Length: 181
Image (cartoon, rainbow, N blue to C red; front, side, top):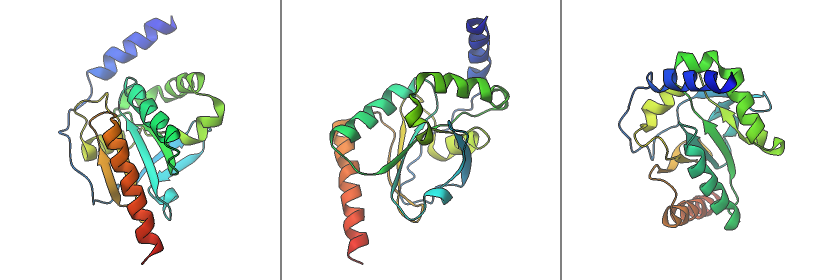
């Protein structure tokens, strides 16, 4: 029964998505969006992370988790120090109606110690997708926010070592600038 419900939901949701052309958003302010961690704590971005560099790994489909995981592994293996959040960003009214079921499914597949770093975005999902673009939706949107909530790095082409190195370079440059005003 659950499988049937999941399949119906998938078919209904996949037909409701608007395709937005991919954007280059580096240098722009990240829009104010709200969501809830898997621990059920409300969060607002960028407001709740102002004052520190923060990496947002935004996914628009379940299949983007593969790309997000590669980014997280790369960050861990290179010992990159940055606050990071996964933002499953789901557009449409129908997914909001099944928000509890979707979140419970994520909780079942994600270890509990990581729940505070996973923030599902439902109500503002459409605006985030329009802001970044959602073509090639399996690719994560990698967004580095500076301490003021402005985007200092953006990448949406799927994980690559070169992109990880560029992100690390941007982190280092931003840290050096903050320490030498």
